[in-house]
Length: 163
Image 1 (tube, rainbow, N blue to C red):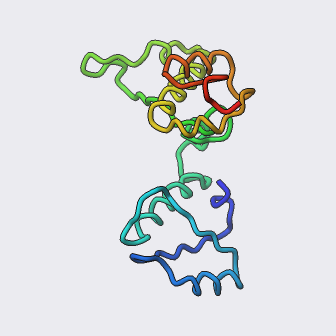
Image 2 (cartoon, rainbow, N blue to C red; image 1 turned 180 degrees about the horizontal axis):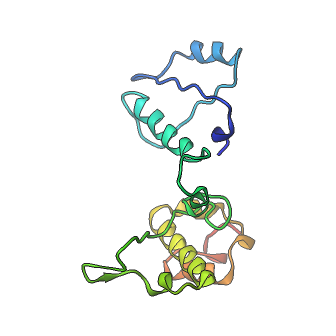
């Protein structure tokens, strides 16, 4: 989100071992320079990483998405989804190959839908990225959150989660 607010960005793609450190030092004398890591893996070049950055940043710019409010439910969005992976997504039709969309999503009950989405996000995060849940302070999780995490086999409270 911080990068999307910038008036301009410049990306420099390293190859193999990266960019000569002197180049980054020189650039820092003229502009802010961030060295960004996308994760625990190594690429032959930075071009793919830059494409990921452009995709992640570009979708936050006004007018890029048809509905600007849709980013509010994305993984890691500030608010209810902060530090969580997005839960399952369903589109049309309501039944596909005998697999229905969960009934709650068709109910029109916005509170119940929001709770279901948070529950599913907690489950998915516990399953795929449990280290993200360590970012939560105890007061960030309500009773239902704790129950969902326990059901997912994730330790809460005095069971090993950050207190």
